[in-house]
Length: 244
Image 1 (spheres, rainbow, N blue to C red):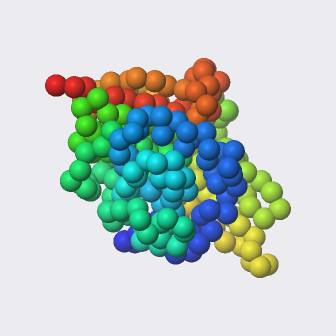
Image 2 (cartoon, rainbow, N blue to C red):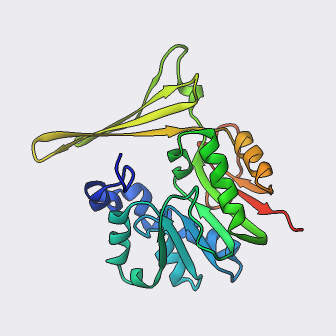
């Protein structure tokens, strides 16, 4: 761990290469829903990263700002068309205050799990609520813990296997933590990268929201407002700041 968190220059340089998160068919539904929730107001992205969501959202006419810990990720954002116009506060999403209020705060692609304690995740909800106007919305996109796939006593689940990349998640079901391990084959040599996470169930996030003065408004199984069911592998959840 360093001042930029886990996302240093080496990770930032290839972050957008993952078509699973950067392809137009992935980005467009997310941007459409976020623009709808912003309702003509300003939006704040926690962990804005390389701007893969913020820049197309800004092109739809939403005034977007961001918070980001990793300077290399922000440098990638700045290098893109329109990136210099987006205000980004360097800092973590738990304590950083941009001193403005927004109609929408959002946190996508499992990034809430990067906060590896319950206290930190709750503090993130409270920071989001503090940045919201009355009636504003906080949205997160996060995977449902896939523990139904774990045989009794097992701790490892593979999530990717190909010719040049292998990925496995290693679960600690007692402490509600897991680590994602990546191995890449690049230029004839192997590189390994591991990231620690904390998972939480939707009901736990709902309790965090209540403690932060938010109430659940919507929960979908995806960005196209798919029904959230017992077999959904992720949820897009929206909480609203209680007025008064």
